[in-house]
Image 1 (tube, rainbow, N blue to C red):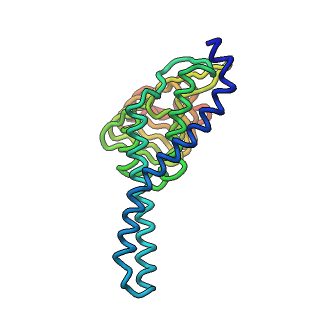
Image 2 (tube, rainbow, N blue to C red; image 1 turned 90 degrees about the vertical axis):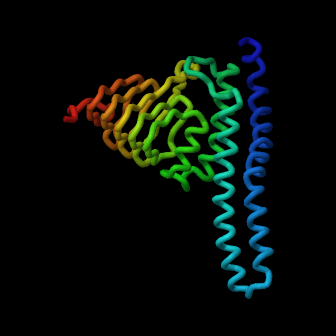
Image 3 (tube, rainbow, N blue to C red; image 1 turned 135 degrees about the horizontal axis):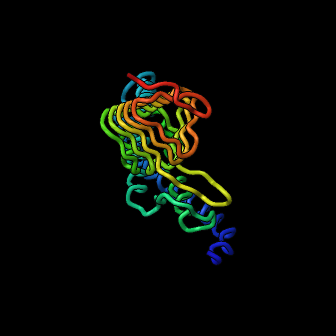
Length: 239
């Protein structure tokens, strides 16, 4: 720890520069099939009149974007799934190896979040992506938000809906340390739009967190309960 503390101010910019090159490789690999497809369509339309050719170019370019995005979520998903960079729940010094791994993992996820995730939310493709990166997701789940930090620490049961722009956060920084905790959401739950769930929270089966509500750290919601407010409190039990 003493060695890490001494060299961390030097290590951080080095890792940042290194990751920029890695990000370029990831984006480049994801773009490869897009360029192959677009080039093929351009060659096939060479003999058409100019207006029809431009129409094909436009449609092909749009399709190329989605080919890039799907390639990206698969590639990043596989990287995060198989590289040992997903930090486990616990408390870590900010200049520790585990915190560096957490930062690298988050940087890979941002490559998707900032370019493509919004376009496939909510669809089966974002469910595929979250499962690839380690989120435990049940059947018939809808996730209508990209605001999920540390998704490998999230568990969602069957038939649950995460509302639009809801935020789920599995980490905090406290007293100069990174703290990671799991968030568990049960079966047949509804998480309202623009609500906020903090680390360590658990929501029982058949429960509701109302829109714009805030669950404080380590809050436990029982089964069939409806919570609302900032901070969220139990307002009634579902029949």
